[in-house]
Image: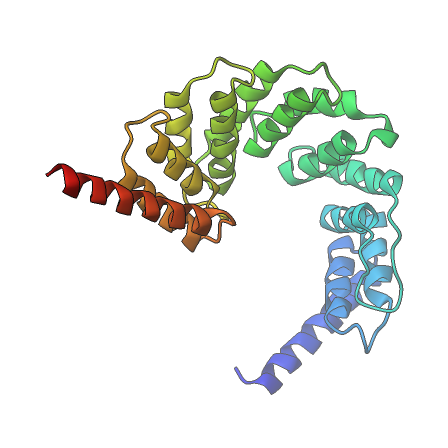
Length: 273
């Protein structure tokens, strides 16, 4: 299909959606809003106008988008700006959740908003909701861990924080990989548990591959100093190289220092022989 045919199809779909939107169909209203979003210069302000109509008429995706606008102070494509208003954001997230009570995305949006904005006075309520939702998605375990670690909406309890981080890290995705480094740090420093370098080392191994090379760098440190494993300078070098490839800020400097250590060790070995 060429560009002209694509444009004809888009125009036909828009006319179809507009006809139903004008008859009060919320999904069609949202489709019209999406069309106007693609052409902000030609139709300034119409994306926001139709998005609000879709939200007011009960379309949950539109309600989430309106909530996002108020939460983040986004500027819709057009000629105006939506100012940050967490109360309005909460209102729209609540409406989306009332329409779709099992939609984890709406749940996460509302809970995160309440948890991280104390002026709304809903932090304890957010923790209660997290306990209700936690079996459905790993992000709720992470948020519960943050709440207990920092004492947000509940009493500070680092042991419970560690528990919920481990629950959340059990999911096989980037989210769990990120949390593995956090859990390793807690075992390294004895936060919420006894210090256990071997367990910390195991969690670091699970955390490799995440952006920033943090786990790789810390594994290099483990092998260099024998934290949770035997000292192995060549293995340490391998992990520092990998951390440097992933743009860890300190990896290059540590790699240079380790290479100097290896050269000195080789020199001493030659003298002994």
